[in-house]
Image (cartoon, one colour):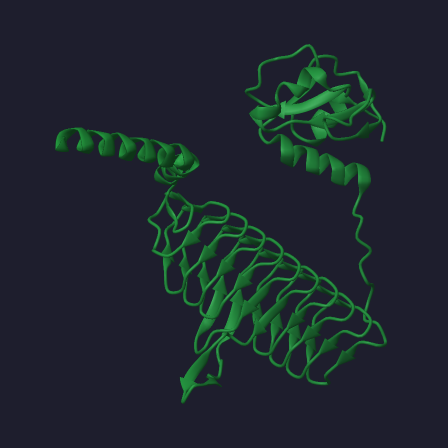
Amino acid sequence: MQKTLAEIAQLIDGKVHGDDNVVIMGISGIKEAREGEITFVANPKYFSLIEETKASAVIVPEDVSLSKKNLILTKNPSLAFSKLAAIVVGDLSHYVKGIHPTAIIADDAVIGKNVCIGPYAVIQSKAEVEDDSIIYSGCFVGYETKIGTKCLIYPNTTIRERITIGNNVIIHSGTVIGSDGFGFADVDGMHEKIPQIGTVVIEDNVEIGSNVTVDRARFDKTFIGKGTKIDNLVQIAHNVVIGQNCIVCAQAGISGSVDIKDRVILAGQAGIAGHLTIGEGAIVAAQAGVTKSVAPKTIVSGYPAKPHDKAKKVNASLQRLPEYIKMIHDLRRRIEILEKDNNK
């Protein structure tokens, strides 16, 4: 790359503060950047690094205090930098082209235009893969499953029977969609399997990370709404409903029949007990154990999860527990002395 700051600002819809003729040769992180490179900062916590970085220019929010550094002011520095990186580096993925001769595709499967299917992928009977979707090697698409347009299914993904996946969905390697829900009945001390005959529905623009498990419903459907993003190693149990534009971070576990409303954030290792409702816009903090439903637009943390302000006070008290124990022992000793004096 060799572009002036003015040219870069035009590419990312930004405004230059400083010398717009400075030539930029590359991109890098703010701590690693060298002269001739451009970097970015979005979080106010790191604004101090603007003056420390060796980069020749920094992409920053529009409301940042102006600096001696050359800046490009943008609405969303992180997004702008990502856009620039895509232009500079290009797409690193090497997509399969066409349909590989080793792919196993049922005669009655429906394959759209410009679909790419990699080596040893399996597309079962009556499955549908719509236009411009890419199925990498080693994937399994089950009976009567439907995959929409412009989907990207990475290697060794399993999408079982009768699953519906919308458009522009990305699913990363090792994920299993539509495995049986964890349903058993106790019969004379034995765990008898309850058939899981429902399905999974994933709407448009969802992205699912690696090694995620989304269980099929017992009767109806497990559901993931439009625009939701799911990190690696997440468990989504049978009959869970996740609304639109939610974020589910790594190692979260969602028990059966939980109803998660729109724009909820579940932080890493959060655990949700079954049959609860997480209200719209709520945030469940990392490692929180949710045992009761969460009201809309609230933040909960701790175990059992409680309003975050209260959880912080409880945690602060726990940190002082040794001090409290010492205080109690001291008070007990004083009381014993007073009782002896009164008995004389």
